Amino acid sequence: MVFLESDNTMPMFCLIDSGSAISLIHEEFVNPSMEILPYEFKIRAVTGNELPIRGVGNLQLMKDYGHQVGQSHPFLIANFPRTEFDAIIGNDWLTANEAKIDYEQGGVVTCSSYIP
Image 1 (cartoon, helix red, strand yellow):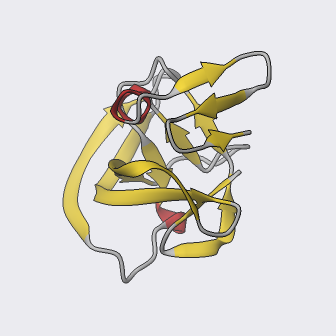
Image 2 (image 1 turned 90 degrees about the vertical axis):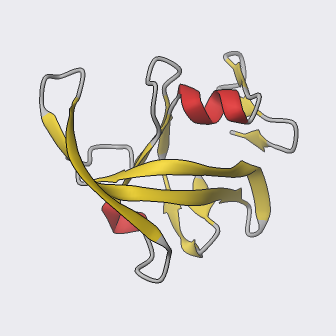
């Protein structure tokens, strides 16, 4: 479970997907005061469904009330059907943060932290 730096009161459940070239966050988790670059287009999910993209925002992930996870990174802001995940951390974020997936413990290791 992680939080956004701008709003550490609402936890997000993230899917770590090294097969995804991009990172996405559901628009519900974006604080209206955050600087967002409007950018409207649609992408096709692996299911074949189109996902409308609303913009791009540089977001900082946090854990445990104030501990940064990796570096601030661009996330596409989308309105996608929410199931168990609120965001997808893709290969772009994993690569930029030199993250390693810990399959045994079920988490992600970056140079600055561990995400269970």
